Amino acid sequence: MPELPEVESVRRGVHEWTAGALITGAEVVDPRILGTTSQRRIDSSAVSGFVSAVTGAHIVGAERRGKFMWLSLAAVASSVGPAPELGILIHLGMSGQLRIHEPGDPVHRHTRAILHLGGGGSVAVGTGRELRFVDQRIFGHIGVQPLVHGYGRLVPASAIHIAADPLEPAFDEGIVVAGLAKKRTAIKAALLDQTLISGIGNIYADEALFRAGVHPLAVPARTRRSRLAAVLDSAATVMGDALAVGGTSFDSLYVNVNGESGYFDRALLVYGRGGQECVRCGTKIAKITVGGRGTHFCPVCQKAPRYR
Image (cartoon, rainbow, N blue to C red; front, top):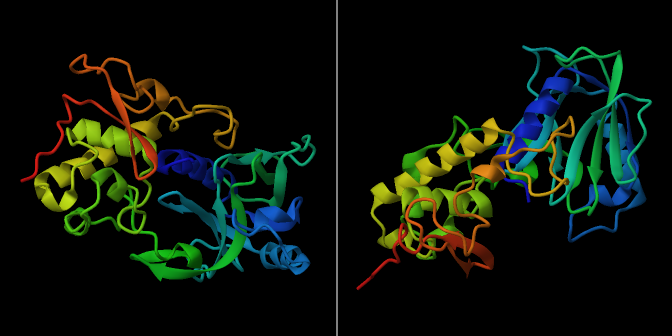
């Protein structure tokens, strides 16, 4: 699943092309995309409700928190106008893509929804374009939700429980360290708790722990707070580095709005390198399962905790 750097790469591209645009119409090609992975039986009224809710609205901009992205909507386009009250929540799931197209471009067979746009955006192309949601596996979803206050900003209602991520102004490292220090589960699992800190997934948790020299089975409640802070700092750094090169792409399913892949996979130090030599000490990278997730670490650089 795309993590913070991948979703942020997509968000930046979508914002560049759509901010200020008027949604002149919408199509739901496959109604299942309006549901979730656990609810794919969609009432027929959901399609007309979605189309009606978004048509005629202006896109204020594309926003993100952690792995969640949304388009903030307003009735009137204005940089100083009324605060948006609705948002189009877009969750990419495992294989979702947002692609910008000209209206006459061929429609990919896995296209699930299309927003027809007029004007707006900072990229000069004709008078209209389309934002298409392509999802091969249909693990993602799209829908209109009210925006509510959560952790210092407006977010879609279903994301109100999602904590701030390390790359946004609302993130408070001291508060997160204090919350992390109460956890008695493995630190790898704690980092994946999106109600504590959002945006970190399997890839960047492994990379952050390696860079901070912390074993994935270390218990936060029994770990020095300075080391917990080091893990958070490492997470912010590694995700920033990944964002600079478009994120991590292991296959063609993750791409940005122009169809380009990220290439941070070339810079990964432990994730996916089980059995290979550690870049620091030459020891073979180990792989274990933590919280149901494959976890990579160096047994020498990340010494196992010894609790008494």
